[in-house]
Image (cartoon, rainbow, N blue to C red):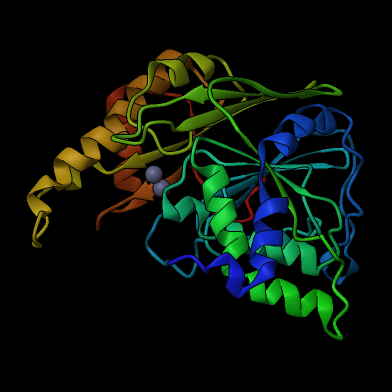
Length: 326
Ligand SMILES: [Zn+2]
Ligand SMILES: [Zn+2]
């Protein structure tokens, strides 16, 4: 339930600065001229700012709270720019572990609003602020992102007030977020980096996206959560790295719970099996196929890779681990 505005003026303030169409429009142009973040680092470690484009797996997990795998999140870095894709549970701990700046990102992109991909969004918003961010966090995501951010701001309104008005002297307004709701198409294009949102099929989600990142030195496609999707396959043609979700085809069976008979149908409509992905990759021919967000369902990673091979892909396949770099 939402707070009533008269109960806390901070809620109103938080909601006003959180989203709003004016900010969205301003954001589109501001993004192109975005200054580098202050880029505070955890422990003062060095951050590689060379012009090499890197993909860093921050979270290779699923909704299962696997201690070895944080929720879905990936960073792409180029020079001083750091782009975050999805914000699963544990994201900021992994950002620190990867020695990336902890006080903000050039922009945050959300593939879709499933909780496993967004549970870390409050962490991203508030932790980057507490660690020094003073400018609005730029968040791009599908329809519904603005409402989600609005609710997060409202949920933490008392925290925001206490941090700024009390002895912590938190940076006033540093918790702000600029949201831009996006669909398919180019969503970022600046100084050699182009990011294109790709529509994918993810069951009953009205909008779910993958992203293709084109840099001077390489191309990367992050598939998000997706059932086999023609646009995603086309975008992945000959890319350097394709990161794709997958489930173990040999383990598909109804689950022993109310509604569990629908599980195979859910998998079919929302996700991609190892054999389907093998066929997709055989056609698209990515130089490296990275399996992440793997629904093993009791199977092994070797079983999943065997499914990829049955599907027909003979190229390089690796299973992502948190903090891997590609
Ligand atoms: Zn997911
Ligand atoms: Zn999902």
